[in-house]
Length: 86
Image (cartoon, rainbow, N blue to C red; front, side, top):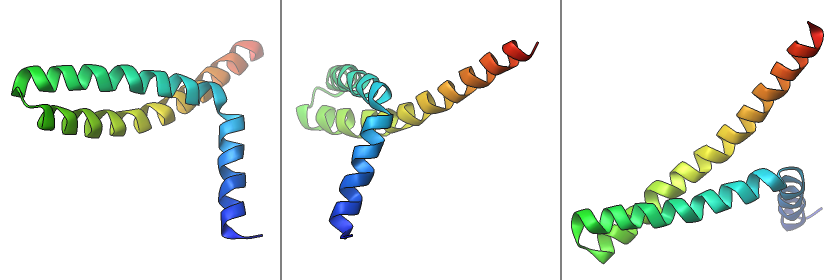
């Protein structure tokens, strides 16, 4: 199997198994980019600096949010199992 095929298969698996979290993450990212740009532009008056801040901070935050969402789902599943045991 070629490296390209392996990457494609991995991306397909991630997308298929995490579809809802990915969609929620992308919608959060769009909102976050807009807020970050607006705040940065208002504070600096610069489209360039506002744009750079709006790209950097929300990008990092969006990645963190995706993993937070996955961890939260595991936490909820454990809570549900604990409730069933008692």
